[in-house]
Structure formats: structure tokens, C-alpha cells
Image (cartoon, rainbow, N blue to C red; front, side, top):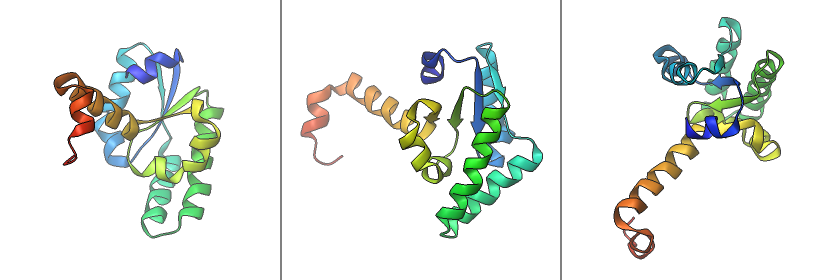
Length: 134
């Protein structure tokens, strides 16, 4: 949530798997901060899942085309930034993220950075650099 809040955006889009959407964790956290969470409608969510399945079957190009349309749909509905709430979506939208880094928040990368920060706060940066078993 820190990265979302740091953007100072009020309308937050969310792209994720059905299971992640069903859990509602992102939506609840976003809305608890008095922000608007914009999610795909049923038809668009089906396309999100189709894109993820295409990636898993090895067809990244088609997956990217479909997912990009879903991101564009969220932006057209007012999303100012989109949270990529699962591991597959950042892989699919890699080119978009590289071209427009201020439009997306990759939750996986955010988790990795937070984990490293937590570890460094416990053992120190030098220990992280010295420990070659990590």
C-alpha cells in the first residue's frame, strides 16, 4: 500500500487472477485508504484469465495483446495507475511497464523490495552483501 499511497493517485486499477480478485485483499486495502479501486468487469476478467493461460502455454505475444487491452480498459474507466496483483501480469505486461513505469505498480517487485528492506533492518546491509549463501 505504501507504493500506492506514494503515487497520490485516487483511482487505482487492479489486474490479477480470479482467486486474487475473489479474496478481495487488494480491493479492501485500497478502499480502506479512501481510494477508488477499479477492477475489470466479468467479461474483462475472463480476458485477464485467458491472457494468463496463454502466457502459461507459451504464447506471450497473444497474452500481451489481450492483457494490454484490459489495462487500457481500466485506464479508460478512470484508473490513474494499475496495481499488478499477481506474478503473471507483470511478465505479460513487461514492455508496458518498461515504457510507462509510472502507470503500473508490480506487487511482486514491491514484496521483494520490502523483504530485502526488512532483512537489512534486522541484520544490516553489510551482512546481506557478505552472506553468499543467500
